Image 1 (spheres, rainbow, N blue to C red):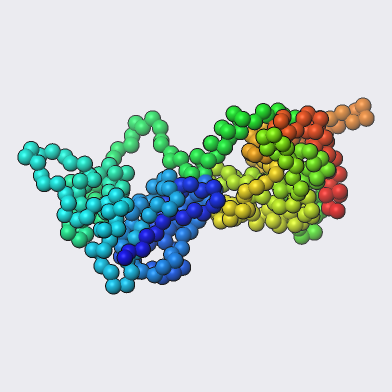
Image 2 (cartoon, one colour):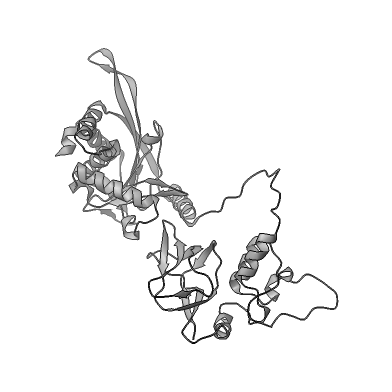
Length: 390
């Protein structure tokens, strides 16, 4: 009996996935542990390994297919000694047709829909996406069945359609972008946002960073910001909380989610118990999390469950912005770039490097006074960088 390969559930909340790429072809032999496919979830692209040994009999879902439900059969493996004839009975339940079931030609010539020709589900899906008619394709599979290589050969022969005069380019929505859109829409619709802003002088912080890096460290301004925000949340625990309907949940530790830009969106890897981490430890962990986030190699537990968020666009030259809260959290701090600006000091005009910071807060959890205390504590740490080294 052929073995069913199903869409795996790669995280507790995953309901569908995108089959990004097949790593095998029909007819390939596979062993336990071999990589079968790459599956794209809302946060990462992950490899799916084979648990069984066998030969790839049929690929039922085409590369690039979105919204494939968890546990749907995506491929069939033939066990030792089985031939392709064993596939049809199993594939019937997956919506395919056995060879030789094409309707007889009607009295008058007319174009039949692709699904009426004997073709594998993968070939049918590929033809539909490419706009090909199966009537024009000769099948090389058993009984004249159209299979993947026949579609690929037809695509190679087809002339490239002209694209001149196109008014727009259609960009495929990835699972990550879809989830980002849904969550941000939910946040703006259900969370009563309010905003508080202040400027921090960072000249002493920049001097401290320069001294540390001259001593062989690799500390970024963002590392200082992470450390300062974590300590401020520790000092103002009422801000490190979430709305839970009829109660407020105040977190026991500061699990700081830090936004990282990746292809197609952003990911927020979480530094657990960040208030207890020293500056060097924060720097090492953040560098590792950011690198693996960009490679799509974060495990689900590394980007879920933060208690508060940080978004820093200073490296892009942005001076000031408002961020959207990441539900169910109650706040996010938006940090801009430091710029030299005039300041009044002891009745005289001076120049200081100022970094603008804006707190987006859920007013159900964080009142204005609590938000002001949090920003005040944050500024104290930023403007006293030696306190972040302790």
